[in-house]
Each structure stands twice: as C-alpha cells, then as structure tokens.
Image (cartoon, rainbow over all chains, first blue to last red; front, side):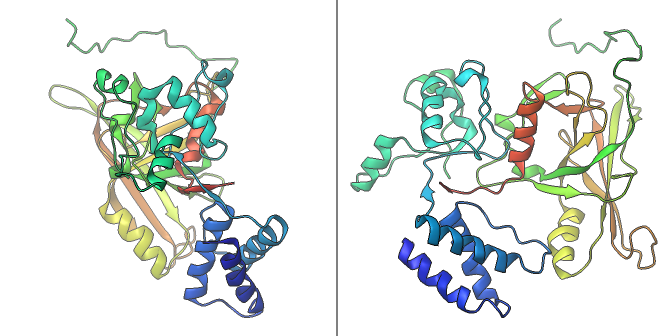
Length: 156
Length: 199
C-alpha cells in the first residue's frame, strides 16, 4: 500500500467520523494501523478505540507522510537479545530492535537464529527482488550452525 | 551415577530477614496456549526457565485481575506417588465479563485447551528471580472447573475458571532471564502481537 492509497482510505474514514464504523471499516482501520504505524491494532472494550485509531493514523500520515517499513528481522514472542558480549548487554526486543541490530547480532551469534521468526539478510532481500529462486528466509549461515546440529531452519 | 536424579536438600532452611517473603500475586499475568511454545528454543536450568520462546506468529495473552487478592485460589500442593512425589499446580482466574465473544474466545478455549500461565509474585526475591512463577510448563494447565453464577456477589455474573496441572515433577518454576530488566522485557514481549513492519 502506498502513502497516497492510505491517505485516500483514511480521508474517507475521517469524513464519516461522526457515525459508528461498520465491520468492513473496522477491518480497514486494523489493516491501516499496521501498514502505517507498524503496530498491531488491539481492539479493547473502549467505545472509541477505532475512532482513536483513525485520528492516530490520520495524524501520522499528515505529519510524516510515510508508511511503516517491512521488517527483515523479527524475533519470536518471548525472545530478546541480551548478551554481555553484544552492545554492552543492552536489551533488545521487537519493540526497539532494528534490522541492523539483528543483522549484527546474528553475524556474531549465528546459532541464535532459532530465536527469530523472520531473518532475511540484505543480500537475500536484494536477490529476491530480482526474482531469483526463492531462498529459505530462516536458513542460518551455512556451515556454522549445521555443525552444531541445531534445528534452525524453520519456515514462516 | 550421572543419571540418578539427586533429591537431597542443598541449603539451610532459614528466613531472609532483610527481604522477608510476602504473600500474594500482582494483578497481571500471561496465559499461553501450551501448543504455541517452541520448547526446542526454551532453556531450563534447575527450576529457572531462562528462555521461554513461542513459535512463529504466536503470542501469549495478558490476564488482568481486579481486586485486592488477584488469582485467589492459586496454589501448589504435593501429590504423593508410589515411586516419586509430584506437585499439583492450580491457577484460578476470574473472568469479569460475559457475552458471545467472551464465551467463544475465552471460556470455550479455556474449557478444552492446555495452557502455561506466568504470574508475578509480590515477593520478588533478592535479585528478582522469585517474581515470575510459571505454572503448567511440564504437563500443561487444564480446566477442572468453570462456573458462571448469575447471582455471585464476587463475580457479578462473570466466570470463575480453575486450571490445574497434575504430576508436575518440580515444585515451582520461575522465569528469569539474566536480570530483572531483561526478564521484564521478555515477559512483555510474550504478549506483544507480531508485527512485520516498523518505523
């Protein structure tokens, strides 16, 4: 989805702000929330949570004019990065981990690939975009982890 | 013999006067479908789970209890056996809501599933290792009683769910990752929905 497409949808929703949203609108808001803000929308028992989400998305699009970027690295739920040998023991979770941090971590500790549910190297991403044969996104670095006998190759 | 499990006591029985034990649980916890846990990626040392990781695209669900005594009825008790004694864990959850969504997405699931629950003790221990207690890691918690009393003064027509784990080999399991801060981050990451995009 492009920024313009997202803006079109959110302007339409904002135009009907005074009335309750139907199920289709709610699904659109949930989708936009993730595409634009990079967060999963959590409906609560709050009466206005969908309207609040529309305001949040609208504010982001009008002020920043950007969409969320697709992440190349994503930890599994419950997994964190916290090693005294990496970034002085700083604690990373999906909330504050960037692709660069994840890539550096896996370069240093390739056997920890099992903590990731998504791990695409930059080279792999570039290769995929050129429509080369599809690679297993979660395959560890060849050789190193295989020697340790861990089951690390998992599919999404 | 390396394959003979030691069952000896290994420490003096005393009270920590500087950090006295306090009863009770914090009002929040996490419930996880046991089948969603990636056990191959989990790490257990003694009675500490230092890595509790879920499978791809899975996450846990927060449980929040109201009142001054959240999760009342949560206990651990000994079960004697012929060759080995084991433990029974019980977790009681009050669901202060009702309706089609609650019935379908919570109660029906609790009735038939197997779960792992992490609760936060008010007693944290000297280094925070005693805070996050894990129930159901070995055998899974399953529902043994679910009640919806329309005139209950405590529940106001909500649900009371009792989950039990029988024959757990260890008395208590704790979730602790390197430090209190790291454990809190890992605990919170269990309930964060997976999102594939970021800013």
